Length: 244
Image 1 (cartoon, rainbow, N blue to C red):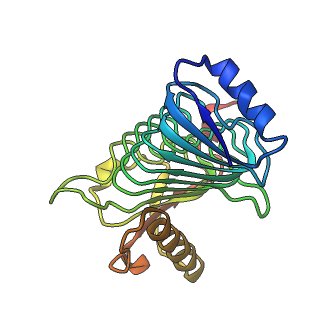
Image 2: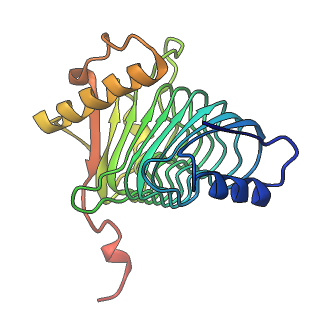
């Protein structure tokens, strides 16, 4: 295992050190990370990186199969246009997590910020998934075109909302799964509550179990049957705004 001390190293130099290290060692630990951007960008399958600290924006941008495990918080745009792979965050994560994500999985133990899952999409077997342990901010699943967003609502106070406002604004693909009922005003007019299918329940159970494994939590009390599913009313919600 290769260990790199990132303290006081500029982000470009740190990423160059990682690029060089993966040529001979696929198991890397980065210590003392503090705000360096683009860590894990474009890395292929088979590479595993443990990050101790707080990586900067656009971590795992265009990542192509690697696994990143962060012992700290993630910043904005984690998983930007990520193709494949897995990100496990032992903390909270910032805005636009999973921006235009095209595949792979992101697990966040705590909260996430605004516009998480914006422009997520899927193609054939590539279906991205983001699992949020606690709650999400406004505009969850904005312009979402595919994939799944799963909000577990763990550790919240009684009456505390699982999401912010305007969930599913412009959604035209994929689905948002919420562990509990919320006021209808939270959801945009493009999203509608629909019945869970057996396939949905299998998907939820798979990722709930994985969440428990990664964060060493007892998730047996989380029942897929209790989730509410929000899906698009149309695959082209703004068609009337444009001339034919």
